[in-house]
Length: 202
Image (cartoon, rainbow, N blue to C red; front, side, top):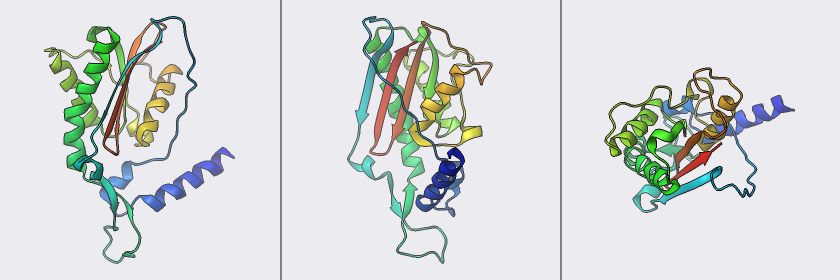
C-alpha cells in the first residue's frame, strides 16, 4: 500500500510541476503531521512562535504558468516560481522571524542546539543561519547546527521539516544528536508569502 501511495504521489507531482523547468528536479512528494497536547511544564514543548505574512506583490512570487516546452499544450498550467524574488524575500525575512521567535521564547541564541529549516536550497538555508547570527553580531557559527536532507529527499516544501526532525530523532545523522531539554528552531517559508518560526524545547 505504501508503495502504491508513493507512485500516486509521484504522478500527482508530475501533473503540477513542469518537467521542462530546470527547478523541477529538486521537488519531491512528502507529508508530515504531529500531535499537539497541553503540558503544565512551561519550560518544555513550544516556547514561542513568530509568523509573518506578506501578501501584496509577494503573493504572486509563485503562480501558474505555461510549460517551458515550446510544443506544450497552451491550456495546461504548472506551478512556477520567481526564484530570485523568493530567495531575496526569504533571506531578508526568515532570519528576522527566527530572531523574534528566540527572543519571545526568552532563550539565548547560544542555547539553540539545532535549526530545522525548510529544505528548499542549501545555499539559502546557510544564508538564513549566517544572517541570523549576524543579527546577534556573532561571526563564528557553531558547527553542525543545521541538519540537511535535501540531497537525499529533495524539496517536499514544509513537509521537509517534520521529515528531517524525525530522521534526526531516529539517529539517521550521526553528527546531529538531540537530548531532552535541547532547544531547537523550526522555520519555513512558503507561498503567500508566509513565514513561520517555532522555538521548541524537547
